[in-house]
Length: 70
Image (cartoon, rainbow, N blue to C red; front, side, top):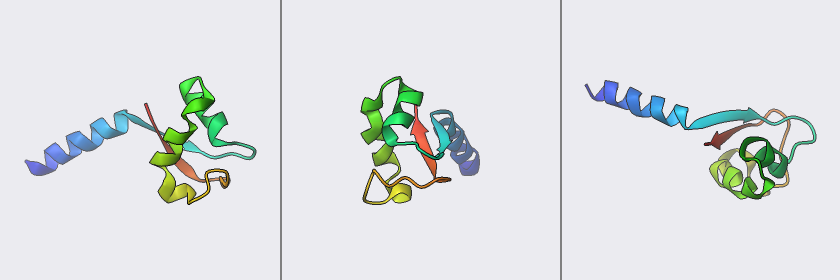
């Protein structure tokens, strides 16, 4: 039964998250604008993806897959 509960939690988490693949010329502000209607939430995207982006939020790489929470 624990596996089913784990699957339910995983499904709920996926429903609250989208993925975005970084394209040429994109910045966290532009990605924030696309998903949230404002570039001001770029820090939220950065905090959720530090493990992918690294220590400098200005160094996005083409093809990186970012988690975007709703």
